[in-house]
Length: 323
Image (cartoon, rainbow, N blue to C red):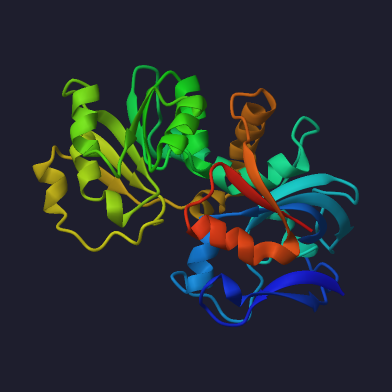
């Protein structure tokens, strides 16, 4: 028996219950991981509240890092004792878990368990946003909403390293300071200022090549006004609520814009793509281009508290659970 967080009904943080469960031997093509650290993400809130429906009961959590302790039949890429990190299916909030080996990557010695667990989902998300969805290049101006958050902080650091001018938005002066520390040249307090007007002012009317938006309802459609003609609006999260249906003609009116809602798991569907993405991410972490700021650590049994802080927007950087 191992400890795990179980969800029997959708709702608030109080539906997260610590229980004893049995983990079977790994199945065909699976590895079993003794977890050293578990990532906490806003994605976990979407599942818990029912925004992303999933069969009940379930164990939340989509990323972690630890050691391989057993290998199922047909699994050949990993051996017992290997250090691994993953972004994968639900089941992460547990001391032990089984995972298809196709979703795990080797964790380099230069990257700690905590860093690996904290950065897989958010870091791989930042990787495809910056390198695939819109390939940021030197001289670009990019707008990053929630620049002090988990993905936002990585986008700022990596975007700056790629030679872009980073404009960030934040909800408080404290978070604005963090965004600047992460590489945002300009930070807009979106609760106090008209961020679209400020972007126009900062760029002297030239606007941005791309907007990365993990906030959602509260920042749309004003984000479109931050883009130059043929610019790209990238929605990758809905922290303030989902963006409602809109007239696609807006994209034409505001300059032949592109709009997309990519997901990490679509990119991860191809094993070779995942390995390439992860290598680039781990190199960036190991080299210090991306500094993994873990601002909160909670015991697995205190998952409720972690969710309360996350959903209350009282977190900066990354949150992990320690089994």
